[in-house]
Image (cartoon, each protein chain N blue to C red):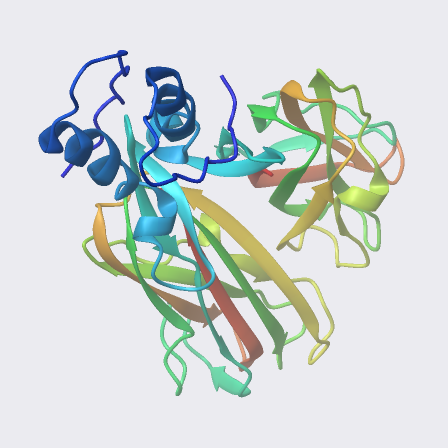
Length: 180
Length: 181
């Protein structure tokens, strides 16, 4: 069913079951309360007179793990990872604590997308630590708004790399907010 | 039209067209589905029994550019900048990669507001990098829930500064997201 612009009622006109079903029942079934299923979700528009429920999903892995890879990889515990149904747009928020055994070496945390969309982790959308003394901790975050997703089920997974030495990551957090 | 508290129907009472129009038609027209007119809108409460549609917006400039002033200003490529319809509140997220040509000097990114609201960039709502070795990059973000906007069309524009006019900061991968609430 779809939304129909509500009819204007006219005095002395006999209402039919079909009219009431179309203009009242079916329209009410297109509203947020009728479509609401999951606590913590919100509603976004997908087109003219069309809304959809989208859950805001997150994942957290606090475990401290390391990598010496100079290209984006998974840690021993893959993730954090979030699978959501999206339209073409979403906001991705991610955070990590980072340090490195090599002084001034850069470390990166980014995210890859799989499923309906395929996109590798990118330096331009990453948290980056650099120019600090060896083993000095920092805990930072980054955010990205992507408007070129392929609509459907998309999985976002955090990825990691270092310029040199052994990079350690902990308190890893990922949140995806679908915008349509 | 506005939302009207739905009437309670009573057996054997003749309903008038006016009642049906007020309590059914007009109330249905106040729902989010009736007001949805474009992709990517979300719906915010704008008062008792009143919804308004808002859209998040983002802008990204990856170009690496420099800045050498202790006063807030623009880079060669102004921005990122985002123009959105807001009420009084918006979540503002900014991030960038930055480094300074001098050891231990600050590189800062914040944002200004123009349009319905006028607000200068502020150190308290910005990304700041400090204490790194010269030319070493860092990249992170700042987030602020700004609750004193003037409702209407507001433009958020990233601004930049460094510790002193004698130091040069380089900024790249500049990103801004505004979520009207």
